[in-house]
Length: 184
Length: 190
Image (cartoon, chains in turn green, brown):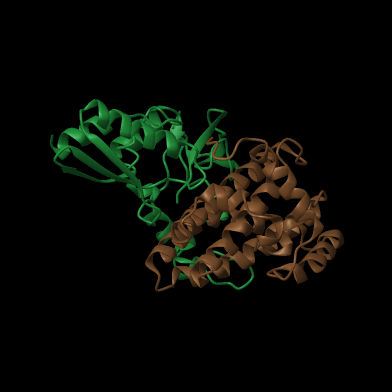
């Protein structure tokens, strides 16, 4: 068995909460190593409180067992996943399903230059993570496109949504509420 | 106990207990957006607690669940701030603001740590905390001149980071939090 075969098999596993995209589209599979009959997969959680974590781990293990190998799926709790790891194909699948893809982190960096420092709590310092995440002011601005009609005339309804990875927005052009993948 | 495991438990206990308290607004927050917000924040905090307990569990040769639920209340290392049952909105927002402020400083320190595992997890947690801080700041801006909010901040500020001894409210919460687990035979998995 080759690593390519394993990658192809994993690419058929849907995200349990957003089934339009696969775990490979989501960018959570960090490494696949094949050693004889054993397949070692490293994967990173998206949001730490996401209940899809166990489901993904078990489905990957089951799929590898079906291929006739012994699975070793390791959850890596480091900082290697961000929403920038979602593939271009994955982003398009999200949009087609009515879920606006996350803004690239580089967009946050551009917004948050020295002239427009994001305000942190009281001490005024901004962490590296905040510097690349859109600020509340940006989230409330017209910078985000409606996945249904493409208009930028959208507003923030709630930073938080039905799952940890989503915010709620409303499109004033087509009068449609929609969910926006948070940039992390 | 090793210094590293103690630090991990301190942070994990803060996040677990605060997550539990935040979840008490599920279904009864003053309006729907805040119901969703506090439920989501609670889910994140408990997720962070789990990841931190897992690191500690490897070192202490136990499991995250045993650390979270099988210790006695007096063994928890959380700050008094997170233990309180706060049925008033101004106190809830004051605690949220004070906690996020203290947690941001703690995460900055951890991200700069020589311990790559701890620094990596702190950076991952911080990606989510950005949104909690945004939410806390939004409420602070809205309420900063309200006398009831100012009084709640003054009342709770002295409890940030106070870890010598617990309030009776932690024991009450522990009873609720561990009730189902304690009613099951040892070793039951979920």
